[in-house]
Each structure stands twice: as structure tokens, then as C-alpha cells.
Length: 542
Image (cartoon, rainbow, N blue to C red; front, side):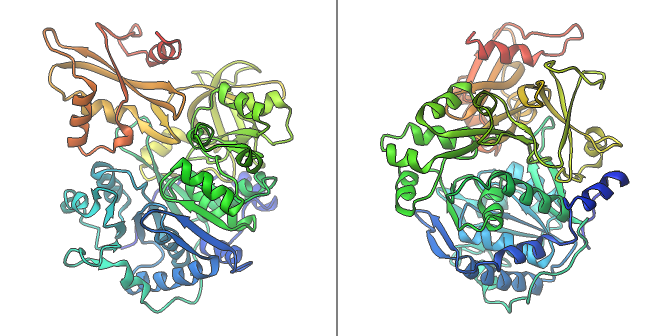
């Protein structure tokens, strides 16, 4: 039975505006991709990987996607069904993404480093009927991890295993089985206002939030972002996982619209990236801050790489002013942007913008996007005053898989409460200053503080724990856990914390990398922990 979601449509006047202005069209994601893919089948498609390298063409990947779509159709899947995949940046990830779009199913990309705790929740809540998963990723046995949660997934009918022909569990299928199917002829027509993709992101809740994008919102986002990046003349090497919005947009979608080849790497290794840049004469370093600074700090970085990094765009994680100024000193035109899974492209600067605006703000609203900043009572604040950022636009998501979260975050006029705090200057440029929502943005990936706190609170002797974002020169932010212990109890060290979270099945990227022990935590009059005070202390080096 198809999965349905309680989405919140845009107000009618906005729908009319977006259609009239060309922000939306009637194509499905599959039709949109087909139109972009067929423009140049001979474009290069290359992946750097120690275990799964690939060199081919966009046309070869498209034709394989049609066969994989045929294999999924033979399993009884079609529009209204949900298919998830958990793969690194291998060609099978691209093939699966394009195949699902062509077949008209709702796609759920899962970042490959998520552990069984997150994966089990995502599969259960999304109602996925099929999962495409790697047999192993590095030292991780992905099938063994899946087995620990599979009994709680009654709707999961099919597991398709990539690179596991010798270790496919009984009843499951190999990816080769899909590849050998009769291809579909082309994209299946579906309702453009129906769900095309569900991206899972951490936030204030202990479990990931399912963010539903329709064919219209996702298509608008791709065209809007590709247009904003059009000045970047060289194709770029993308290291962000395609299971994440940054990797999906920058790696699989925007290059098609901009007429560029596709270059991916399945694990960010700066020396390999630097060699690849020179070998292919391509750019790299855009995305979250880490992708940029790791190249600058690599011993092999030199003038030949600077020449290929004329234009760099950073977003998805905090961008220290020192990083932007360092780029400027090297002669690299760096622009900052702001967005989230719910509204991927909210603001961004252009490379021709004034220097101070370009490197010290997060830019102005992109085409069709509107922003406001409001106080705690929802009243608009003045120029230069901090307030919570509200956004709306044709690329804003249609709702969460949890309708209660949708009702909390989207009002009747279509405004989305981001949970971030920012300042809008007299020229309309936005600068992010803090956040209301309780997350840590580590290397572009959201980490729910509440999720980590719930697990740490079960450690022996812990009376209370608060996890907040600490500044990190490499990753933008990392988690810092503040422990208040029960009388007479010894505080855990970092190794004990890691062991506890590993046993709980939490992804390694979510583990705190710093901890503090305190007698008490700063509180409001009602006793609520003031996390902004803890963040300020960490920023000040206290």
C-alpha cells in the first residue's frame, strides 16, 4: 500500500505567483532529470575511490538507471512507494538516485555513516518498502548492523545489497539482479505536488526529522542553485555524501543543469583531491568549511591549486571570519550561503558582491525567496537587530513526515521557522549569529543535541548532561558535553563516553569531542538550562 504524508500546501496566492514567475513547472523529478541528462550523454562521470573507482559517461549512468528502475518495477514498486538507499559516493548511489526518480517512487537517501539506531528509525517512520545498502563500508558490516533492527521493520520487503554477491542474506537480492532487468522506457509521470524525496535531518528532537520535498520544490531548488553558481566556470569535485543535501545537489543534480561533467570522491582525502584537481583541471573545496580548510592545510597545496579554486562557495556549517579572510588573502573569491534541509538555498552572496558583504555575511535572499527576522513573540525586528529567521519560497519543503512538527514550524502564510538567529543589515544581507534550535553543525551534518543527551544521561553517576556546539577550526563546530554528576560519582572520560555511545549504535560523527564537568549549569528562573550561555563560554575560550 502506498505511503501517504500529511503535507501543508502553499497558500493559493503563492502557488499562483510561483507558477506565473516560472519558479515551478509541471515536470516530475524524473522528467526534469531526463531533460537535463539527454542534453549531453558524453559528459564525463568520474569517481575517485580506493575500492569503487568509476570512469564513464553520464549517458552510461542514465542507461544503467533505466535498467535498475526496471528491476525495482519488477519488485512491484511504483509511484507512492518509498525506496531508501544507504551508500557512499559510488556509482551505484547515482544509479539508484536516478532510477528512483525515473520510476516515480519517493526516495529516502540515508547518509552512509548513520548507525543502526538512526537507520532503523528512518526506515520505520518513512515506511520504506525497499532498501539499497552496501554490504560493507570500510570496516563496518552494514548487513550485520541492519540485522539488529530488521525485526522492527514490518514494511521493509526488499533489501538490495551492493557489492555483496558472496554475502547476500537469504531472501535478499544483489544489486546485480536489478542491473539485469528489462529497462523502463523513460520517466513515469507523477503528480508534481507529490513527495519526490524525504531527507532526514537532526534538530531539536531526539530522532531525525523527515523533510518531505515535492517534485516542484526540488526541481525549483536545483534550477535556482545552479543559476546562482553559474559563474563558477570549472566543474567541481564533490566529497559531501550524496545521501546529504549538499552532496546530492552539488554532486548529482546541479552539474547536469549547468552542463558540466560529474566528479565525486567517496571519502574526503586531501592529497587525493589535490592530485585529482591537477589531473582533471577541476575545482574543489566548496561545501562545508572542512572541505575548504583541509585542502589549504594539506602539505601538497600550492599555487596550481589556488589557480583552480578561483571561486569557492561555503555553506552548511559555520564559517569563521578568519577562514574567509584567509581565502581572500590567497586571491580566492569566497562566498557564503545559508540554507537547511527544509529550505536548502535561502541566502547567498555573489562573487561580484562587495568584499565585506561577500566574506562577512551569509548573503541576500536568492531568487523568489523571502526572509524575515522576528522576536520571541513573532513580531518583526528592525534592521540590525537579532531575531529568529523565517523563510518562504518555492523551494521550501512541503512538510515533515510528522504532521505535529509541520504544524509547529510552518504558519498559514507559508513562513518556515528555521530556529536560527540572524541579523539583516540595511542592504538586505543576512548574517547568522546563533540558533534557537538545539543542534550542532559538524562538517555540514546536523547533530541533535537532544539525541546525544538522552543516551549520555543513562551513564552511571550522571545527574544531568547538556551537549552544545563548540567552535572547531576544521569542522566549524563539534559537540561538547557538560556533565553534572551525582554526589560522590566520578565523571566519565572521553573514552568512556565513546564506548557508551558506540554500544548504543550512535553514528561516530555524533559523538562529543570535548567534555566539561561542572557543579551546576546556567539556568533560567524556571530552571531551564541556558545553552546559549554555554556556547558563549566555549566561544570565549572559558
